[in-house]
Length: 249
Ligand SMILES: Nc1ncnc2c1ncn2[C@@H]1O[C@H](COP(=O)(O)OP(=O)(O)OP(=O)(O)O)[C@@H](O)[C@H]1O
Image (spheres, rainbow, N blue to C red):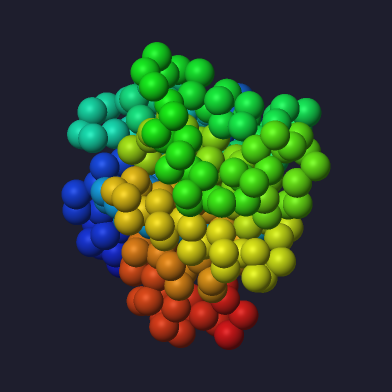
């Protein structure tokens, strides 16, 4: 990573609730995909990872969630080193991850999907479920319907709702708006802002870079598994190099 890129990263990651720092590693015995990559998010903030296809955005998320072993670097949640924890253990520590595909149980009802999200909880889940129905009213209307019968945007709401049932500190989303219309994308982003306002930190990968940076407190542009540009969403949107190279001018 260049000195300038390093300084930009240090600037935005002052008091992170979650940070994957200096992550280097790849899949199995394969070549490294991540090269000293750092991703962080502060409490109640929205951090967005953007960059070209194959840059390692999803891989960086997986590394933060423990789905990939990193050779170098560390992951810390609330100041605690969780690098050695399994994804399941990270969920118990307050992380939730919504993968890009196969993120719902299509044959189960909407409500059963939400209940599945709470499988780790032994307390009363009715209040959380009510909050999720407030956030996504359509899920309340369709709570008895099979989740697989819903539209793409509604299925994403089920996936996000299910993740929220664990009452996470950090919600990680891998391309939540993939395959949905621009209107549905805007609605999903509005809901994500509302989630962040409740104090939950959001870390997400997005293909719709421009729109995602508009709602981002912090944006990370990754190129070939390394931090290329880092700043507030507004800074990146107005950076001529970022605009020309990654946002289509
Ligand atoms: N399960 C896997 N096993 C081996 N290599 C993988 C695996 N998943 C991804 N890769 C490789 O890792 C590199 C980065 O992929 P990744 O999906 O992280 O990129 P991305 O930035 O999220 O791209 P996209 O926007 O296309 O989803 C690519 O070269 C890809 O082929």
